[in-house]
Image (cartoon, rainbow, N blue to C red; front, top):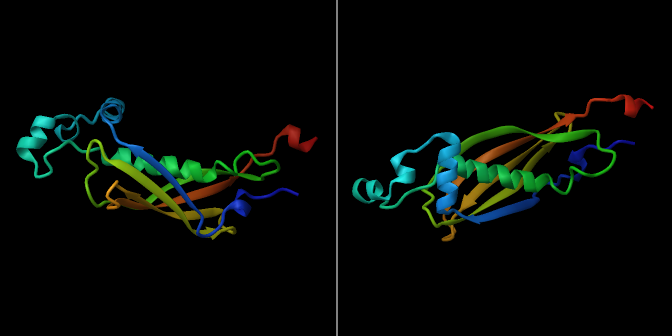
Length: 157
């Protein structure tokens, strides 16, 4: 009997990922994406021109941390024997950046399973990102699709 990975997903399950956002994170992310906006890489600019006064992390980097916690949410499932499907991110809805993430902030991304739809083969999680002051800095909904595995000659034998 084959099982769906969704059989191991439970409403209300919570997963977290925490990280201090450092200089290396910002510089490498800027290099990877090509986003060298002064808001991310120019401390002097932010001191002189911004009410924030310090450099901020890329919003897309924060979404990257959301992706990390989504991966953590499936780590206990993906290597189980006999699964008929596998998880694939179908994307993020209602992504909102509520407060800036300042260089040096320690963020915690919290991923809470909000709904499971076995007929459609998907789960939805509420994702919240907090800074070290427990301020909500970003939110989204993540859709995880559980794709059917393709059959192979090995499976037919």
